Image (cartoon, rainbow, N blue to C red; front, side):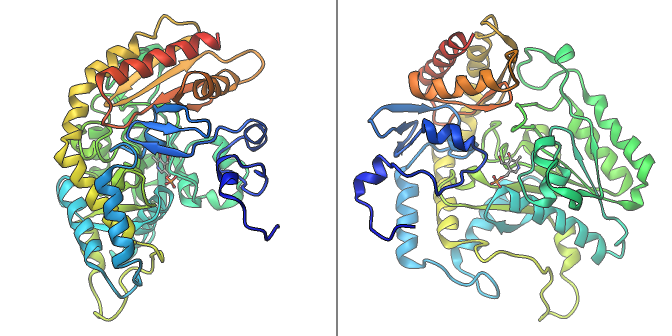
Length: 448
Ligand code: PLP
């Protein structure tokens, strides 16, 4: 490791990329031919050579207010100068309580209590731990099994990969993934291809939970966790009626229902939470990302009163839940969240998604005749395009599409296997919808 200070120029054109082992990245391919970003404002990134690249995926489904928005930047700067940090355990600060109250107020029903984390992965692990501890404090400590779903993504903690349903995220990580079961995913190309919004087919797949209950018995099951809309595995909107059916089965058997809204929270589907769009109140909601438009790491779990209150017993000097992070409710993250939620409200961004949804869906569907397009799905301000895989390997076509989109067409897209996902910031204009879809169309032709 060198000790010399690097010139500022090196930051703009770095020549040593070896130290950073990059997350969820093809490291060797990247380092041979980097996709470098040095600036961002509103809908665009800036590259080291000064190109403006339109952001088709809101950071990583996170920057819903757009990038480097003035009121959010100012709030973070102010907070850093006023109170950079205070201990998260046994002490509090006003912005933490204000942010929690604000988020709770946006959540449906009696989802009234917020436990802060720093990421979606931590939010999921926190929710799973609260579920297990809840049954313990309620005298039913034998309820330990957790039920997830195939094609679910819940981050990368041990809890999250256990209930998650993605083989590559699970197969190398050993035996700590026990004690879970999985429902089937809800996608069927045969029954759902080219659907705008929630598919008509598939609500019956929720009944598979009855099979799992019959197999393990409800007395062993703590919680069911699903993304209302599976995002990371290719945008799978829930079939009509599916989530209501899950809620009914959980109620019938005394099982907690957790919605992972790390992607769907804060406007992506036109509402503060997907729970509102689908008229279902889960027992917990996990969130992260767009809570502060991706500016400062933050996540959390919103918990219904009956779950929270079950812990508030016993001697009052005793910690009720042995769980928390040094940076739970970090002052900068909370200040950024309050400023972001103001932007969402003042600019009516959630309603804006509802207005844009049909325009977005039509624009996306205009790509259906392009080469190799097998399916297109849209919901809210989200869209996915399945491409046929190349004969020489799954994921090659989409990888090339992502790379060429950035280098040659000035648009950032996201890929999983051979699916392209698009989730632009909610401030996107109708013209920019046209621009992104047009660019993606050219990319799809280029990788034919
Ligand atoms: N849950 C869902 C539904 C997600 O989409 C993600 C990230 O994309 C996570 C959890 C993990 O969040 P993080 O990467 O902040 O740990």
